[in-house]
Amino acid sequence: MNLILMGAPGAGKGTQSEFISEKFNIPAISTGDILRHAIKNETELGNMAKSYIEKGALVPDEVVIGIIKDHLSGESCKNGFILDGFPRSIPQAEALDAMGVKIDAVVTFEVPDEVIVDRMSKRRMCPDCGASYHLDFKPSKDNKTCDKCGAELYTRKDDAPETVLARLQNYHTQTEPLEEFYEKKGILKRINGVGAVDEISKMTLDALSQL
Ligand code: AP5
Image (cartoon, rainbow, N blue to C red; front, side, top):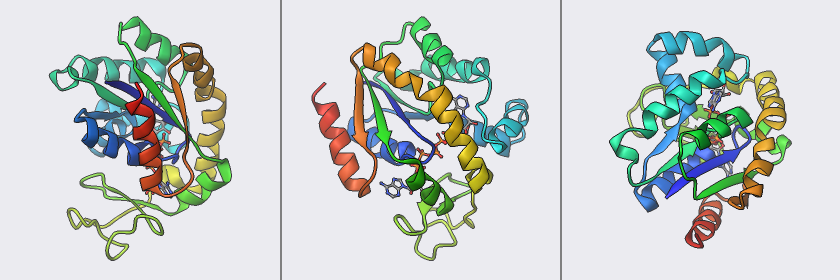
């Protein structure tokens, strides 16, 4: 199964991709995680992407299209994949089509902006293993260190309130038009992204089981 997960920043794409990946035994490819890993390792890609990410802008299309091309050609994607955070613009979606990749479903998690702003203020991340927590909904045992590897948790720079607003604005102008793009293809599934994580996972898996 080849899937795309869409939704505003903090809508729960990463959280839900873990469940779907486990259920269908397919890898999740997060362009955000790949870019953050590159920034941490100060690679050429990371140094280029840093300024875009920190101000809440999209990294240029040709860069992320190149990343996705590399990943999709890998052996691990031969039985299917989940794209978490790609495509985020019409040119990116057209590039995916041009690669000849058949997408079975595009799931978009719908969450109002005001819920997003509150959620992002309470997200905490592990710098080492990338695990993601939420102070209220998914706290680590002591709310300070990672349950999986013990590293001290941090707040993503782009989760600062003013950057979240910029990311939301970019989402509405550049990414939201993709809903119509995929609706016309008849593969868009809208899921209410507000509520308990388990309930949202159940709705998502139900929608995918009808494919
Ligand atoms: P990326 O890391 O993909 O950021 P994003 O799309 O803004 O999404 P997030 O990772 O912030 O949130 P999410 O939807 O995965 O939510 P999560 O599950 O973590 O990208 C970062 C940047 O990289 C972009 O801004 C851009 O600059 C660049 N980039 C990436 N891809 C690109 C592309 N294709 N083109 C160009 N540039 C690109 O949940 C969020 C929080 O809420 C967590 O704390 C979680 O525990 C909590 N939570 C989840 N579900 C619930 C729930 N139901 N109730 C309560 N809390 C919940």
